[in-house]
Image (cartoon, rainbow over all chains, first blue to last red; front, side, top):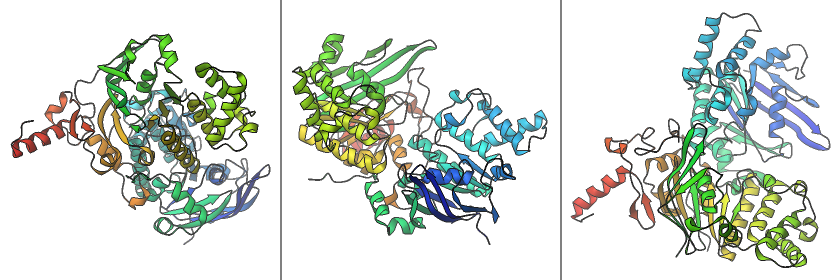
Length: 261
Length: 332
């Protein structure tokens, strides 16, 4: 069986900075792969390259065995755009401030049908279905982004991504801006949707505590290059690379520690 | 001896949509030279109660409190002028967003020197030397050169260090740090936390650390206070906080915080959202989300001591205590 996504020697330079240097990995169906590293490590760039939001310098990305065009305007670009969706860290910045929750989903649903006309009743039942799928109520339908809480906004963005019925969602720090109790709700939702809808997640984050309990596999990036890759359990119990060990040491653990004398 | 002692602080904000009650009974106690962490979710009143302590609330806000003492002074009696004298040498504030806290068109050294001269006086030359000295103390290499830099020439971590230097240059007795590392990378965060801890020890200042990150609490706290919907619901020494929390919300907070050392443990989200703050709590604010809510939770629980420096506002603990007392034959 071929992997859902296979990335081969992906490179991208900004000026004289290597944001992605020879990055290669595979992602299976229904797998959650975490991409970790500090700011500037290139993890976001890799996510954006895969989602087609940046143009690569060199390398290949194959999706279900097909070579992705990766450049806006190229043939089939939009078709893949539907299969690969993206969720950003700041939902307020990803939502049109003048669009209500229902408008946001209706626009996405129309796009999912390649702009073919949809009956109003069809649109309305579609929006309700997806609002419900991410745990929003119908009372949220007509709210504007600023009238929703942070967690509700992130749910709406997830619903917008899901209604395309994608195979892969690139999540760029989707819970970093949220409070812990809301963060847990969103992670729970993402994990449930992975199971129910069979999507794979490329989960970009700096928070190793979240990675440990959420991801199946982990890829550690440092200065644009992959330095370590492994199953979550192995990587945490037996980190090989110095940088991984450094990340683990500096990661604050929420448990009581004896104060140093 | 406690440096800061706040009892039952209430803050009311007037808005065009009517009054809002963001703080409804915050208790905050900081001992001299100790660190107290304030934990809670956004909108639970952490930052606002600290602004109340600093006397920096926006116009139209009103304060009520049973007690508001800082180093033997009653904060409620201070005028704008006397408050001004207290800030700086008395208490200092470290903000989350260091970039927004510095003036972008002034050199870092000048801004530190200005803080020193405003509160401690002295010549420009002495103030500049102090600025360089403190940049050195917070671990900025080549402080003489860096003092001539502008804020945009500093990295996020360096700016946060400079911010700490600017707060400590006036040698306050109490430092309030509002999410000082939230915007930083983990390894930079670890450095800044270590720096804060070292300086807090060597200078002997009391530190209030506002955070929502229990990992930071574990690294820093002597004591912890948990706020929910504007009210302090539990306070405990750090060890008790992590080992045996009493309030269902504190327990929920801990259960939904991922911890890589604990292995693959499923997170248990707390269902629902915090209540709106446009009315005063009639009962326990957490009862709508609490799995253990009882009839009596419709009445407001008060903070009750359950151990040394450990107090909880929950009917459940009170009931358990009464049962224990009845069994041992003690009078409550």
